[in-house]
Length: 211
Image (cartoon, rainbow, N blue to C red; front, side, top):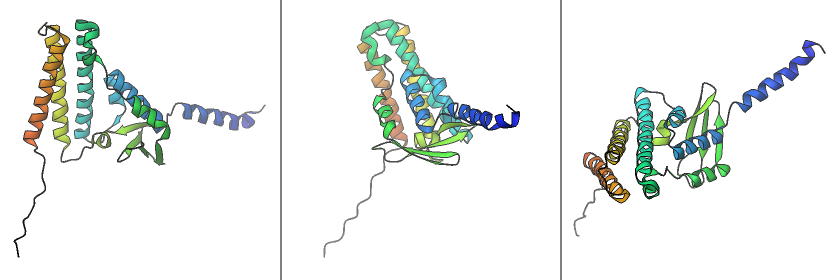
């Protein structure tokens, strides 16, 4: 068989191999959710698409807090065994993974939108270096106005997880319940600090004069 006659077959095989190495948006999002559940920070970070330094810092902060949470879980499991399950379990995303089968996907060039059932707005994925990646701005709902604050909150959460893990390793908690109580108090402090800096806005009401 001549080389010319083999070319169509070789081309088809090459295209098939490329398609196999290029998972679609649904597969990428499933991998992302699985990495989140497993606390696999490097895998999560690798699936984020960023375009600005601020977005890169946000993606790094998100991965860092996930890594800190995983370290906390490992410390709790090593110290308290089964009673530390509440501190060692990853983020449950089974329902989100199950919804992917019925997700609506629209692809236009190097941009894809994926909408899960019941999701208020679609998630955007960008094809970069022949791989679909999740837009960190879409995923976090980040805007130029709030991205710095979101990054700061993620860093605060990472610090809380890291400190709690250190306290567990230093035998500062008699039980897993004590560790969990301390963690909740620290997390509430992060929330309170965030609300103090950015209090929720309330609609102004006007009273009409009586006629």
